[in-house]
Image 1: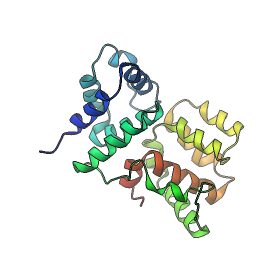
Image 2: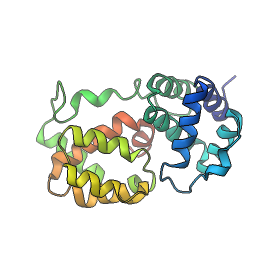
Image 3: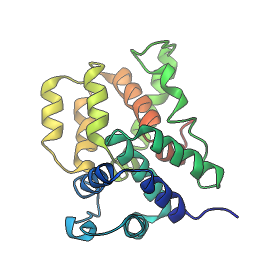
Amino acid sequence: MSKSVRDILLEAQEDLDSEQFKKFTAKLTDSGLQPRVRRGAVEGKDRGDVARLLIETYTEKRALEITAQLLRTIGANQIAEDLEQEAAANGYSQSAGAGGSASAATPGGAGSAATPADDASKAAFIDEKLADLVQRATGVESILDVLLCRKVINNEQYSEIRAEKIAQKMMRYLISEALRASGNLGKAALYQVLMDQQPYMMQDLGAR
């Protein structure tokens, strides 16, 4: 019998120790996501309550996306990969290849084999899906960390985007303002980071 989304979310949270679970719920209430989960909604709640809250607040599909991203944000990468594989095995998503297999083509990364045509195609995807990416943005801080490390954005841009606080505003500023000067290369880099960190969302939007 297939597992429910709640079962999958619950299993992932049960793999967290008490300190990790505390960090997970703290990130959930401080992620900038809309609608916002208030601190009082998770205080004193157990893992089953939090799994149910995620589904009721964000729908089943987004609950899986958001949980995987938050797990990576707190450093629980293996648990995030296990969740994605379990979701795929139960028909809730396409397999993301253990956290995203497209990273080898990341601009500036090891083994990069991107061509100008590839970059243009990825940049076009980012432009076309701007509204969806803004609406569904999660874990923007970790995206910014990678882009800063790869010198796609600079320290000033990083600080300006972080100052927006709300995830949707941060993503809009990143795409519409910060990446404008870098052209196709910058947007292609963002595409690859999103494929690595948020494969559910990207596949749902048509990325391959």
